[in-house]
Image (tube, rainbow, N blue to C red; front, side, top):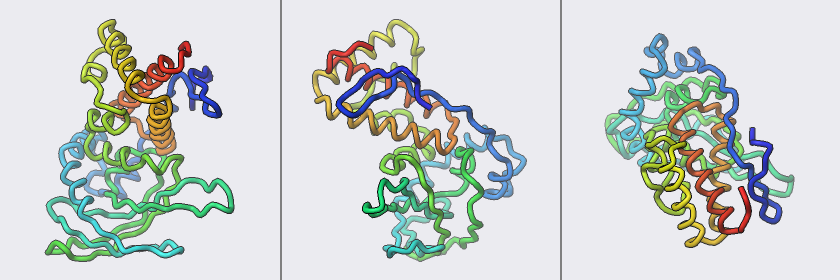
Length: 264
């Protein structure tokens, strides 16, 4: 899933020149129908446009979810407290983890409340999630039980950035979470092949190279790479997401090349 041409090598880390896009699967109507039967015959782009309007309020509801601590055994359902009922309530709890490196390392599992329809409308590689028949409580502070879904992805540490983007579709916020400082808007709004944008990218990357250490830039590059691997694994075909990944990667690879004196 990565370009075979290596751009930057730093000690034991070799970064690809580009982050290539995989061949995406078509979104399953069955998956969407299972998440929201009323949308079974609705065109996908219309669903996504509607979710983009509703997503920020749904995300705000997730911010008010408090879950019970879990033991060493992952339960099939989990009780959570809902402190915000201003929009749709969560349907599932994702138990996100990565493949265990070795037997001596304890597997870390992080819980994320989600809305099934958000995943069903964007993640082509996810199976249909278990049925969730959660009744909406009448008062904030009430508890509900939601199904727990284990999810193995390459880079759990950057799942929050990816999940937030799927709810908001804010490319500026995503780039701000991936880069050391906010990127100029022209880098993701204008033609990326235009001379003005290429010059601006070079200038922005030069400023980063002069301001931040190689290790700091590398840490950001690894976060972008992790988010890219997650998007590939989940099968997310979203033009704004891939635009953000392209911009962030090109900026950081260019900054690292300048900082280390390597040629791209």
